[in-house]
Length: 384
Ligand SMILES: Cc1ncc(COP(=O)(O)O)c(C=O)c1O
Image (tube, rainbow, N blue to C red; front, side, top):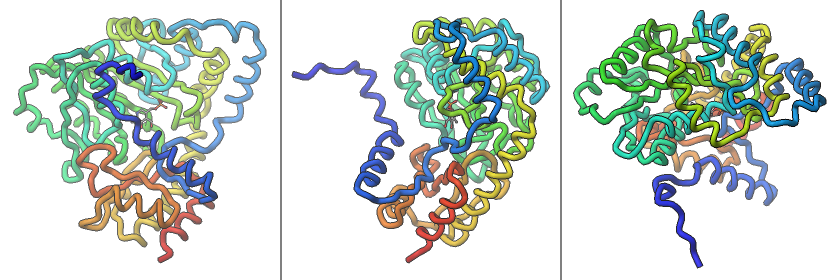
């Protein structure tokens, strides 16, 4: 007997990484030592005090009860102060901040709140695959907008203006951009906000890489009037090595957040209190944390750049974020190149086409691997 799944499941496939990680686990169980440079899951510890605070909070009986859907006030206050300190942006603690269990759940909640059949969402190509899957789950259509190396991986707005945008309800942007590591200048971000205003599009800026190897963190709310038309997602996953803690937030105007909360409050019953207490400590931590984190990532990036040079891959030394995005020598196909490294050299590197058709011919190396292991990967990749 077969019970047929909902039609919406036909619009999505199992996440590429979930399949690939299964394959890697299978190789490992067969005794093959695979070095995984695929996934952006930080391998370091969060700041020591964050763990301490979380542990202390776990001893409080209150911690085991259901928590508020909007997080404790102290957490929202900490996000608000953090915005002020890092972006010089004011967000109202009680109205404009919604703590989330990681920014990925926010992508789902925002889309569930604002998209439906007949709507369209503008999604970057290349870009984070969740924007596509979640849009499809809502029944809305994905309209890809091209990001290219030639255009510095920023949207070609004059070209987009020529399209029929009447059904477009939402636009996803993400700077520093994943997978390319491209940044955006404030005046280009401003042009996107104007574009969204003009076409009555909800602009969502997904911003988890602001502090990784990036000297100029930007918030969409630095642009005057942006709150009227924009939302912004933040995450502690990459900035504080807290991916497994699932700590993120959505910032924006009260009216938008209330709609998102209607969806979110159907799905969870609050965040474990010790994790909220730990997140507060992370947000209050001194910015010296980023200096040491980025020094470590710089060291790792240098090793990957050396691997790229030796393999004749090209990269942009000005790019930011948790990955190295590199172009394969002409005529190399990224998926077969990646499989070749996995099957012959025991190193997994993500093929660029996973992020969209404009990712063809590129690969993405993660910096979430200690230098000793990266050096081992270097030896394996370079041996003939
Ligand atoms: C662009 C982008 N957005 C969102 C996420 C999700 O991050 P979080 O751990 O906060 O859910 C990721 C994670 O890799 C990402 O690359």
